[in-house]
Image (cartoon, rainbow, N blue to C red; front, side):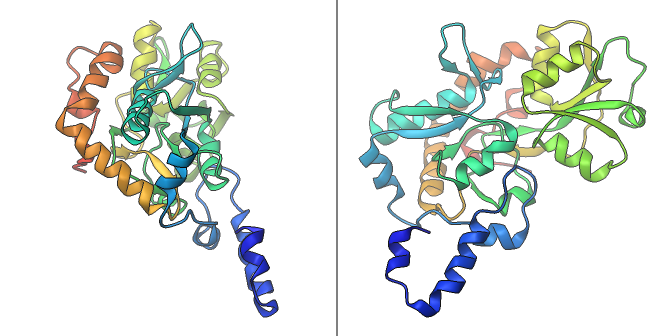
Length: 299
């Protein structure tokens, strides 16, 4: 809530308005937020947000920089990947130029706070849709589907999830794996890092027995780094991944849903899958098991 709005308020309203302001400051990570805080978090305006982006002449998007093939930085320092290309397409269709996009690097735990503090217009960073996160942000229709699994060294004695009890499991803070294991296995030892790259480095140097993460990331890394295998058991069920905007920003959410439907008619996500993802996965992987074309989730 801005100071401009507060100036015109009656003195009797100051206390409840200040209370709302305090609630809006709650929630500094990607963990499930309390209903009272998420309900009162300063919501984006219901209308006029597209006009704001057009007046700025730039779309600001939060992306990963260390999660190939979805969001990473290439040898030339350019943001590339499945998610970043979607962002460029959004900028092209909204502003007429795919280069009118500013990328902001995010970590799993900073995605929701960056939306809430207006540092970005939207998040395109592999965020799995969960009931807790839906209380804090507006998810659009999905663009991917995913399940969480665990990666272990090839010679590990671990063959199923329960074998990790009593061992050290590496997770990246704020990810679905982190939240799920913390909730369902509070007695397990979790070694947490802020970056996906740090977590994988920890596994490769033997600081943990397994790394739990979205299976698409694990399949990709295991293919590029021989000597590791993905446990077949899934941590929870298959879930959608979707772009996210600030809570209350219905205008931008609806625009993205319309955009995803339009891109689906041209099989746009399949093109990105062929460009970035297909070569990272096994040859028998079906695209429809990974992408959600047109936002049409069949869960």
